[in-house]
Length: 334
Image (cartoon, rainbow, N blue to C red; front, side, top):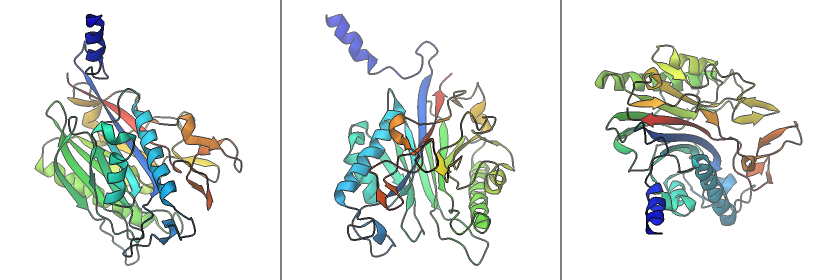
């Protein structure tokens, strides 16, 4: 009986990947959590819509339920263990992320977090959750988007976090939420290409300081992979969009608008991370949209299924988000 107990206890310390080849799995998730606001009114931002007296009647009970739902999605996406890294966008601020990691089912997972700065009038930020025993931050910076036009959308900063993984190698993680298409896709396109140029400049700056860096970019780019801003980001070479080569019928996307699924949420990696010999490398075929049944609901307007949202228009549904999470697995070690 004692031997059985020791064996069961030892399972808690086994990495998710095979012990025989010495590899360890490292799961990464990105999730646009759609309007994760605290009901407390912030007079410095335009957040009145998500307050108890606002048009959505955003109460503390609804807020707490939303937190639990986001935690459920992250936990379920981890399967055997929660993801090592979680990129988030549309979180209101520091207190909201603190509540997410400290007042939900994520509390026992040991997550710490880093949050970017914002110039968004509504006060939304991007953030990175990380488990410090699997990713040790060395440096982080919040990078404001440099706009070229007189008229543009104030937006969230890009977030760069460089950290060590278990092999001792450095992974440069960048979390982005490009300006929205509000006001028209073409009319707002320049803002997103400015965001892509800013991100590319940041990558080039990192590459100038450190030879052959390993980049992991994740975010809601508010464009399809074949649109101008993602193509601009990849134009200088050395990067690969993980949607590349995946037929749309096999993976239509993570966001649905007027009956059409889109691939706004993306992961882009250094080509180095695709090499089978790299100490940090993508597990082939692991990139996917996490479309668990509980994250979806019947689309009565456009047919099929759609993401189960907290609000559908101004009608409270009590769901999760208008986006589905995306994730990928990396292998660490020889």
